[in-house]
Structures are given as C-alpha cells and as structure tokens.
Length: 513
Image (cartoon, rainbow, N blue to C red; front, side, top):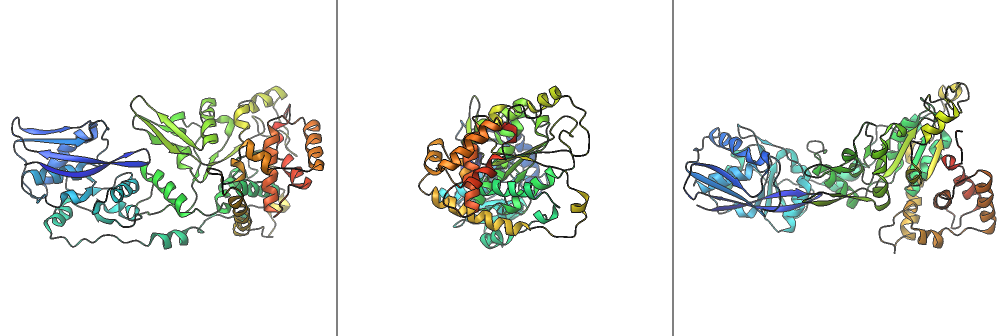
C-alpha cells in the first residue's frame, strides 16, 4: 500500500515542504530510505521501529521503501522520525491514511515514543500556512512558537500515541491558541539591568544614546575596570522596542539555530550577542555543511558586542566588513547558497594598550610607543571605517562610585531615542532599506547633511588640527545629524558638529604614539 504524507525542511531562514512517500512493494526485507537523507535520517528507521513496538503496534514485515521528495534537497536531522513512523503504520494498515495528507507532521522520536523538540518550528509553520494545509502537528515544546502563525491549527503533542489517536479520531487534543501579541508587548519593557546601575560615565552614556538613536556602531576604549562591558550590556535597554515584523524576523533566525528557550513564542527584546574572542570565522558569520546562522545573524535587529576587540583573530574581524555594509550575509557552498539577515549594531571595547593603562590618570603605562601602535594596528582601517563613534572611557572616581545620587534611568533615555528614530523614519520614508542615519548612502548624505559655512569652517579646522583622516568626514556628518535629531533640530548646527568631532579619537594620526 502506497501512503503519502508531508514534512518540512528548513532552508536558511525559510522552509520547504517535503513529500514523504511510504510503500510496501515486496522484495528484500528491510526499511530503505531514499531521497538524499543524511546519516541522522538513515538512522531514524531503528528509532522508529523501537517506538512502534514499544507502543504496542506490530513490527512491519517485508520490504518498506520511503521516498523523500524533492530528491535534490538534503534531508537532515531527526525531525522526520514522526512522519516516517506514521507512514510505516499507515502503509502496513495499522493507521487510517485518509487524513494524513491534510497535515504537516514533524518531530524526533525517543525509543519509547516520546516526541522531542525540533529546530525551525516557526518557518515550518509559516510554510504550512502558505501551502494551505489544514494544520501542523509538532512537539509540545515547539507549539507556542508555531502558534505565532495565525489561520493555522497547531497541535502540540508529547507522544506518538497521541498522534495515532488523533488520526484515529479518538483524540482530545485541541489546537493551541496563544495571544502572542499581548504577551509580546508586555515583555518588551522587562529588563533586569538599567542605565542607572552605572555610576558616573555620563559622557559614555551620552555617546551610547547617540549610537542607539542613529543605529551607529561604536567602540569603547579605556583601562580595565572602567565599566566598558557594563555599559555595553545596558545598550539594549535604551534601543527602540522591536516591531512585530522585526520580532518575527529575529524569532525565525533563533528558531532555525535552535536558540529559542523551551515554550517561547516571540523574541520580545532586542538580542545582545557577546561571542568570546576565540570564535572562528564560521561561527561568527555562519556556515557549516548545512549552513546555519552565525553570531552576526543571531544579533539581527540587536547588538553584537565584541569585548577586547584586538584579541579577536584578524580574519574573524575582516569577514564582518561586507555584512556590516550590506546588512546580510551570503553563505555559498558547492551545492547551496543561502542568505541570512545580519542587520546589527556593532559595539566593541578595547584597552588602549597591551597593559591597559595608556593615558590612565593614576597608573603608569609600561608599554612603549611602538607596542601601543602595534596593538592598535590589530584593528584594520577598513573595519575602523565602519565604526562611527570612538569613545574614550576613563576610570570612575571614588566620590562618584560612593555617591547615593541616582543617575538617569534607561526609560528616560529610551524615550529620547524613540523620538529621534521617529524623525528618521519619516525622513527615509521613500528610501527602501534605509531606516536610520547610520545607513545613509553617500548620495543621501549630500542631500540631508547640509551644513552652514560656519560648520564647514569648524569641520575643516578640526580635520587640520586633529589630523583627522579623510574617512572621518562622512562619519562626523552622520553622527552630527543624529545629535541634531536628538535635539529636535531641523538643521545641523556647529555645536552638533563639535560634539560629533570628539567621537573620532582613533582617526587621529599617530593616536597612541
């Protein structure tokens, strides 16, 4: 008897429906899986047979052929266990096959028939709805994530016996209904950390506010213990809340990577990723035999924090250059090419020299000028070119640390950031792919960042006196436009330019020499 049912394969951040055909043609005894399965899929026959026997069904006898189409797409992982088991039961007459084609079924089986969670439930649910299936049967742990998709019946199951009862018409399981939007908006403002946890450092907080308001990349330079990491970790608390579209995009990436916590629906807060400096190129940008999203994609719509930037391998830092410009990364292999979104804010931190105490007000630096310069040269010019704000972080004095005075909290800063982002949203309404000042092209820069003759003279003087490099010019204009937006000013004033100029310390020729 030939039986047909449906599963799904995750391809990048999208899914493709897989047709699973099970037949009992006679011949050599055994279970044969064809259609480009990987080792995990080939091994599924042993798990499936044990699950069938342990749930009081008969061992299939004779030859069973399982075809997974389209045959030119690699089928990977153990998530096909459940549809294969149902297909075998239906092909051997132990399960009615009349309703199998109405549903997409996915799940990994234990030997006792328990169904384990899978990766990519959200893109699978979206594809299931797009192809107008009646419903999706999926592990219970993934049900809330899949239930984000409206106009689709999502059934969360914990054991193969529940699925068999469902197709036999004896089941009491109901489609899961989740008010995800209400939960999403409730969770958007829940943070365990706040800007007012940080004593002093008002100049750095101001710089991070500007970075958040314009979507600018920033680097924090200062001695150990000055609070660089502490400040960077609090940046997501002042970023604008995720829109539903952004949250869905972010959730899809985390779902495909298997990074969503159990029983989670939408990602409500902007991601903050902080990889260790020993990370490899592939782990950062994504890849592998079956391409998976890397850290820059997991930071999509959020913050990628690289602590101790000069300690990262040069090749790792250089592979970020193109994704930072294009806001997506293309992973190309011999048989496959996949695009992953990668629109993130880069926040980096570093010591000013190997010992960490160059320019320290109290401690003496033990590094020579050549050592300092060599340390700074670990960061290439093209990468530095993509970082808009260079912020010098100085140690906090004891009086400020011991002060009981409360500094401004994240909510107050966030409100100003949201107002500035609203101004930018209106400004770039007709320009697709540009949503904030940091993303302006050279053409837009000339149209939008017009400065007065006084401002031109100020900028010329600053570049001459501070030995600023030519690449600093565009960055200063973009940052000054953001500062003007925060001030509610239509024009870029000299004071806005002056503040932007001070955030280019690493562009000064011979800095640290």
